[in-house]
Length: 316
Length: 316
Image (cartoon, rainbow over all chains, first blue to last red; front, side):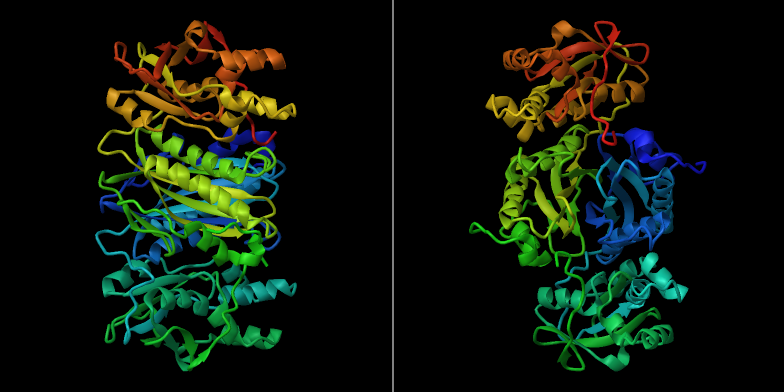
């Protein structure tokens, strides 16, 4: 598409839709793609995994902190991360997009580019959507996925004696958010981690194959999200601080901002790491790091103590 | 649930979620329901039908014109109607809900009641969702459906010589919208048609079984939506005004408001009627009314003439 300087109102609803779907890549699982009343997606497994998320401007992203392309990447990442956390592979994305009429078409093109890139990475397709008007940019993303014959890995299967392990970045997006919140634009590695997460999508299905007993993605913070595993499984998760890696870069940023970087690692969301429990003795491949064990009891402990979950309460 | 006078902010994100999912009915196709990273839904057909819609306060509904329960019904109706229009039966609904913290929990309970009632009517289940904050109430609804072994009925299959037929109400919601827009609250039949549509969901799969060659739901207006069939199928749809029923109630309201009621019937959306094409000679059951034929050419004609599509351009 040529660079475009018009607005969403000038293009109109169908003009916007045509920009989003023009030249879309297809994947074999798409039976009926965008443009019909509904999409049809192949589900050879006999089950479909489905998750929905809504991102609202100035709540989940700021247009002055993130480019449109960043927002597209992040929106798709949130949706696909939930599919991965069930042990499934993403197959399709439905995109509801609401925006003010004054929004530039370059922003539509940017978000489309980001969504498509994330889809290409996981070999999923944009199969449908909806476009409408709203006072702020709002994205509704629904991802579909395929379990490829595996049992879904829910929050509820952790057993006493299991190992707790994580995979992917923890605390990086929170550090980037803190940097941006203080008016800085660097270090670029942490700022970019906030803008464009890189979830370890392919490790979700691998964890399922390794026998993971419970799994979740870390969207609200490690302690908060593992808390859901503890509650659903009726167990306590005992983390050991010495096992929890605090990267040098986060230590450096923490020193500059006078923040304990372990707080970012334990309570920062939006990196979309995976956290899972495995039977003791599971031979965990390199990207998975053990961080604790499953015990009798309830909740999450770090070196035996409760840790404030932090995290984000949207309504406060 | 007991009547509740608190606000969404007082309940918090998880308090709101627990109100939406408490005591939810289940259906056999739900493998993993709400509360996990993603839902898992059975798809015995080997394919899943999926459609997503976003409804924004003051664009798609007004809280002073519709109750929360009405909005729940209408939101689910929009989503399930798209599934029906493919010839499928709805199986599941994912609900993303954004609202200001000051919104009353009674409104959350109302919209939940409406969504659940519409789900019960089609024997689908709420299987997942997302709750977040926004300045106006925003609903993102994703419906899943099952083709039960049938081929999907797309927009693209209409053939020259086919009969064009409709099923369900046309123009009623538009008349109700016009009544409300002029400050009236009656006649209640048309006002209620705007507030709470009653799509003929079960006729979508039946039309597929009858051999429908193309089908759509009428969400933007009969002429506008049949225009998508004409374009996708590469044909012209010739409607005959004498075949298009203008109910006495719409004639009465039209006379009172000085509006030609045929305009509501041909261009009013939001009733979620079904419009389909069938091979000539198909023995159409009672709820289906023939309204024209498929010819060579393009676009939609009424008695040989173009009809202004009307309809709603969201960004203007």
